[in-house]
Image 1 (cartoon, rainbow, N blue to C red):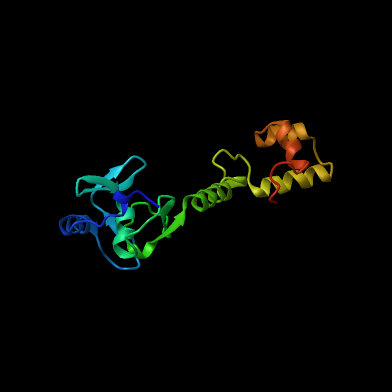
Image 2: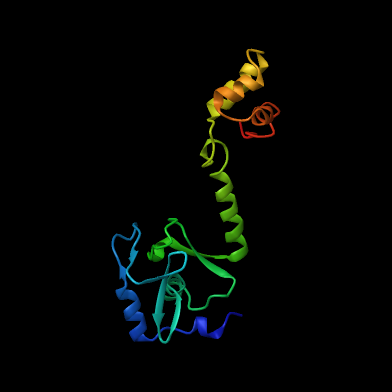
Length: 163
């Protein structure tokens, strides 16, 4: 069971104040929040003498007034500022954490990694040139601006394993 205070309905006055802070638009588009923000840039609402994450209030107003503590509200649009009830859903904290880790991993491999100096084409070229004995690992390292150890790991498929 969640804390009783987190599931108490908002007063009519607080509900009106809350809705006044949302700029509604097309039901398919993100709706903007014009209120306060807490650390991490998440919408925050102060009403009925307490502050709460605005997206949890939004979920409670549109779907169910009861939210368990380990439930998190997520956005299908990926925009944490979005206050469109059609763009939110509840999830468990554990599942949300797993999905976030998978998302980060998907965007940080290969050439999408922020520190990558090579492209997938470069890696394929390196492997082909070594297989054909066209050049040395040292020469490739100098040519591509990486270490010999990195070239070795590429050839042995210890890095860039996805291609």
